[in-house]
Length: 258
Length: 271
Image 1: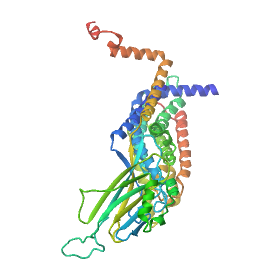
Image 2: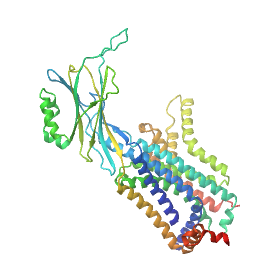
Image 3: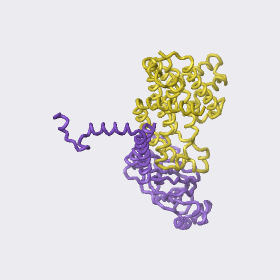
Image 4: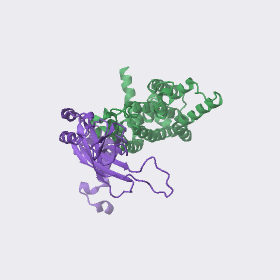
């Protein structure tokens, strides 16, 4: 029974090791948790700053598990549809496009304790003092990223921006604030902002060691079985010597010459 | 009394070792496949669930059903371990048709013989199914074991223990073909065919109203895991909570296994 249990443990340990190897060799981002949606879903607003305007939206508060060998990234993708809505009936089939210049897009990653110590509240961001408030926020943010435009996909009526920021492994709750500066008149367009948490699994040494430990436990059960049944151990030894004569110092031709 | 019990356990263990020696490679291959599958599907699913569950505020209020991928993984593991159980039961049927008299002429009682087969057909595959999920997860990060939702695993194990118990009874027919047919019928056909029959009853006899709650309750008791998977998100429609239904499943399983052992000891004719 010990021998069978040992074999099964070895098999389970091997499967654990192989699965870790698969995580390592597999695609870099195993899965993603979609955590926010189109502008206006969570909290979104337009702020009129005179010669330009700002569009703000956030992700919900989220926290990450502290798991060995797993790192997380926050990805933000923004789709800006520039077509004029409602779309007029146009016999020539041409799409009418808003003449808008986007000056920049930023994502501020803020954790809960920093958010409370900065003293900034949602309402204070929705005023003409927004640029100054953002400067303060930048100091308290865990990370700030500027989103870059994806140049390969650029029809005249559509813009696509993307950016990623690595997330520190901590259980503290955090949220992402998205800000877009443009010359669009407030409310004339509705950017789609998607926040995703991307996960990269690359097991560490101690995780492989745990897999090996399970294999060793299985092997020790088999050894224990042979210690309890010495006659089986002798039989095994004879079988091994017959199959691998070089191990016991015999010539391979010895058997055939006999 | 204690001496008798020790003797019983020793002999049953010896016969169990004999069965394992013949089938260990089958158990090992299946455990390896199931563990690999579970690790690759379930670990990212648990992590995903932890992040999703941490989100607060609308529109994220109600959290998604617990680890949907775990259901897929468990169903795949259930399918491969069912094949092992059927295969071992077929082996028992083959032995009963040929060499069982030789085995029972050894110092081995009928009770020990039947219990060791029961362990090999029902309990070992179920144990391996649970281990193939927990061992890779604990090797990855032991803290994750506590984040697994235990209900789907428990329901799957309880349902499989009942299904595998039926294979023990099927083995008593001494025909491998019958065991294979009953295996396929219980694993692939009965859970879904019963639903079709329930649907037909409700449309033909009840004019589209819900089938009688007694029939639904019986279905839930026999297939608690399938029910909770199929009716995921609409548990309110069920006549019984799957966890409560599983108590009935356990009682039927105990009855099926005890009656199998008693029948084998007292009535079964060994040829």
